[in-house]
Figure 1 (cartoon, each protein chain N blue to C red):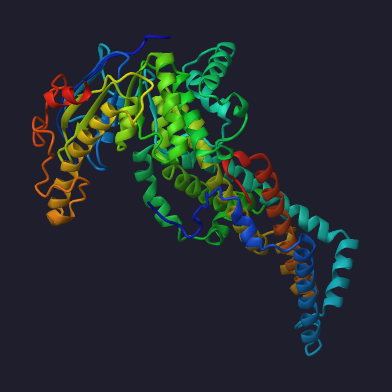
Figure 2: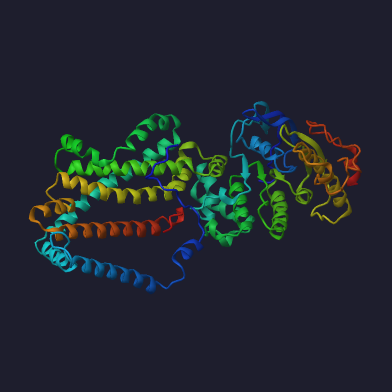
Length: 276
Length: 303
């Protein structure tokens, strides 16, 4: 079956010792402290390096902070964040909702999988950015084109991960379900889908990351609002520090979204083997 | 549901996977409520035969019948307990796992709860009903599998080395429990194992198989020792030796086919010819013996 770079191998092990080993035996305070220390060090290095260049080439952390305050005061930053977030969440949610059943169907209906395979092999190599122009021609410069691009990014990744999950369902469980009286439809709903949950969650997380890539490109090309647009228009005012503010906001926003996703899924879907 | 077992009959069954002939001309008749062990080394086709009875694989020739109906696929009347506890659904609690079959069959909620409680109690898991499979020990997981199968009240229970992954002590406890549960339910049990002692402890009849490929039924040993059984009892010990020689001959044949010398044929008795000393009436090279046939030497050993 097609192995996509956007599909990561799923770790399904329920080995409780794994997270401990990965995180070491360090107390929480130390772990957080080291993270904070690292960030402060990074800012210090940035500050030192920026002294050698003009503010246009590399603005200092202080100047960037002032830029951020400026953008928060006039509401631009908040508007940009909400505009980008709304587009991402709408397109991403639609993509997950459509991608999961598509992946399930492809996994369960061999002829459908074979028919869709050429398209998947083809579109794997066409990044969403390549569709920006078409999206604007077909859907106009409004919200629809941006949401459609995020949807395209997401549906692909989620469907492929779901498909990989369906194909890796333990044959033993399928046999057990059949011998216990489950017909194919009920097997799909009560055995295949639950077995696939960790793959779906992984797909949704990867798709969230890719949605950020897509939204910036789309907003740079055609948008009056959003973080991509903020970064692009900063050029017109020769405000390089605004570019930095936009980049940092993107990074923080992505981190926040991923954290929320991880928290919610590992709380509600733990029994399906989702464990971060 | 006491005494509700169904007879199972395997007639001239051939099973192939592509060009590979796994089982050839297997014949076996199992009575209603009987406990039959399929005994043999790994790769001898005993699990394949069990899968054919379960309906997971379809014979290319011959037929399997259960009661009056021909087996064409899996069915709730034939429950299967797998060797691996991975067969349990890890996202469901023990109670939900056991309720799975009745839920699929559309049994009402109240009736379902009664059945689940009954079978959980039967396998001794009432106190762990709300735990997840990952929180159970190996023995408890196999109890859960058994309860899940029994909750469908099958007339035949097929068990594929269910205690193979358990430690020796737990296995012993499980064997005693299974003996009790079998008598309580009255179901027909077909039990696959490579453990001779396990077969003697549990079975009414022990079926040995010729080594695969092209495996077949080799001999059928009745085992009517009084229950509960004791492996140190002289009659058990005699049967044990006989079965070991019977199977040892098959293992030796397989090893010779793989190019190993006679001196390293893995036989415990050390007979260089690979011929069991005290089993003159057992014919090691007669596959496809009809299910009703019993070697005289075997009867002698049991009396």
